[in-house]
Image 1 (tube, rainbow, N blue to C red):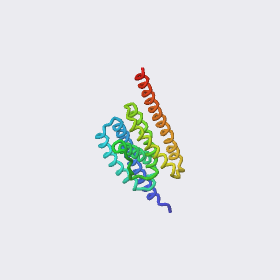
Image 2: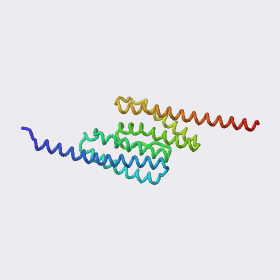
Image 3: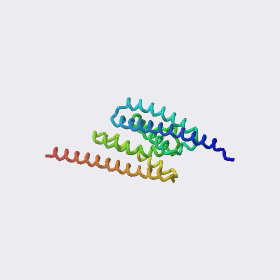
Image 4: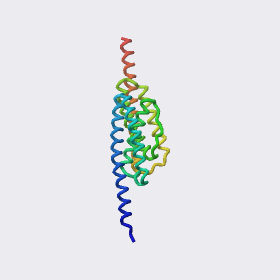
Length: 198
């Protein structure tokens, strides 16, 4: 005989945890966007507060996901984790010049890492405008290394593969930016020599 009360209880249990997971996902996504915005404005103390808040939210959502193994496959969980990774890595790179390992699934880490390169390109463009060529070169080298390492992975999942392919275009943008900076520098040097000769 089918135990319908047990079925209803299991379904209700899953839905309750799924709803809690979706709410917590929104909190993480919002905090990650605010953190990235703060880092872009060089407001690192504010970004650090947001990072601490985001770390607490991450622990909370992972605790919810432990109630049922299917919850880690929910789209909202996946998006929240990759946003968390992107924001955390961006803060870490700007503050220390290094990327850090984070306590998330490998798939979520790679998705967030692939999204990170877009923020790094934005920062490189900002730094190029301020004439900080050495920092632009460091960003270019870091993205090149990320891309090289991810190419070594056997990535078959479509979204992940598409995002990793996107890094190639971010890298190309940066190489064009670096070339443009170098050409402008040579033109200025050439103009300076011409003026001195006159």
